[in-house]
Length: 333
Ligand code: CDV
Image (cartoon, rainbow, N blue to C red):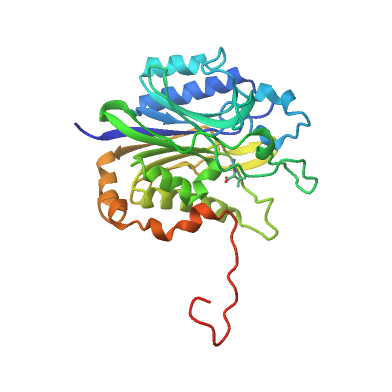
């Protein structure tokens, strides 16, 4: 059986705060139809694809913000997306704010909020769910910032790990599918946990501002895009997988988000890239056999990984400077 699949990334232009779910879902369905016409068997939508990037808006009481989240998928508002998937026989990935009532780590049943993504089979069944682990930004209102980035206020850290599922995609038979969400793409540990499960296709949505408000110095706009691409290309190359990385782009609620969505192969090459900051499809044919080259040679993990040397990765969170070497000291301090 051929292991070729056609994948689409559906970049979204801005979603303004006042734009309703119905309007957004209409845009998503139009993109899905376009992806189907171009032969795609799976379409990837961005992080928080049903609303504006709401963590930029401060809310004193998080319970007043429940309207930004989904408590069920499909819901009345999102049902047309699931219907379109069945009609076009296409799988889809979508990011959204999730509310669930489930026990926390202490066993207490309560309302919880996550930054979540799912992969939905063309039948409408949810195949894979992931909750964002690397939440950037801050918890409290920061008067120094022009635009807030309150992901640490709006979401709990994802509690599902980095799962990979083997599930049918199009004509290719089962494909090993994994997900990352936005900031996760910058963390090689996250990619490697997926790579250790032989992931073949990583779906990833992002909302990245064009300027870095956390930096003390200046970070050029083109380098912001470059760092995004660098992270995705390295993740795909070092873990021998394809990546579909899809942005929400343009000026949203007065804040500029860069686009430049890409599809990347296991050699780390960009196969397709968005050229607008609007609703735009990118499509690529992916031969999953290409994952074998890296996995069986330079990144043959079983043959070459040295876990005995990686202790710090799990034992330590922040970095620690070494003691200073002085003349007369032994090598390595
Ligand atoms: N939504 C995100 O996770 N955005 C971050 C920004 C804040 C740096 C990102 O890594 O793109």
